Image 1 (cartoon, rainbow, N blue to C red):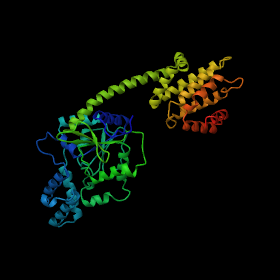
Image 2: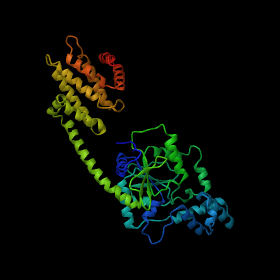
Image 3: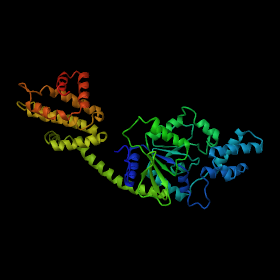
Image 4: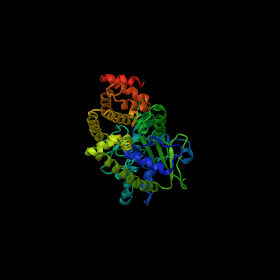
Length: 454
């Protein structure tokens, strides 16, 4: 599995990366107003979901006219929200603090939108197909929760970013409408938001760093999100994982480009003329990728069945047939998590049979076979990725075998030739690790053998 995509990934590669991230369990969705607008696209009445539309709608409910557009130019939405509260305070003779609460309750009432059944069914299917591990949204509404009933839970700005097993946390970055007092909209709210060591700012940056993040219906205009992206790439830059991690933006365009491209900030952009069209495209690709994964699972099951059955013929084949053994170890090296538990018992059976064979008078060539098994194992993995239990079993057998490798009477000359021919295949890191284990467990003979390899 790739941890990142190249500089110019194809559309197919991006779709596959999203699928693999979902399967891995670290795909996150960043959902903005554009997604909710897509859900309500067929509604007769236009839904006010952008910040500008929301402020206009809220101002009408508050009985305060928002400044004319010409005077609003150059002002941020938080600034406009603060000015709206001041105007309401002056008009009604109340405190600005009270006016802020009035505004937030107006926003709560304005965002009480719930999709009709056909749209709910359609977009619920899209989200289930993507199968995210988490969702972050800048929306106040609970449209996403409506699409994922029984499978999600709302989190507000003051909540920790966690959820029960099997439940998708939906983190409302600016607050959730059911808790109107906690909505983030005014300049004062944002000042508090960026206090030093803010939990959610750090948590968001780390979440983006440790996930593949897909932006749906979001234009990367919020300074809070841009800061988190900057932190994830720069503040935590020294942290690199072997897990899939990218930021992929699904961007609406009237005439979308066919192939994805990277922006200067390394975000991958995939253009589409409809969010629904992209979701359908992903769903179609996911069907094929599931078929491939099913075929892979079938192949892995055949391998694990070999390990579980412990058929004497398979054990002998593992010892005697070098090409077959290496093909098995190649599968083990790529999919160790899935098959290593079953393989350990199979390996023990193979080593036991190898020891039985070498116990016969004059069967020095059997030591050479045993050593080849060990060296094949030690070169099947990078040192840092070697399954610990399997490495321990391999080292114990290597120590036992070390007593018979040499050119003295009673030694296996064949095993010594194998070691001389293949010792260069062992990485420096592996030799160092073997030496450490041999020293720790008092494998004196093996330590002596390893000195000649350093």
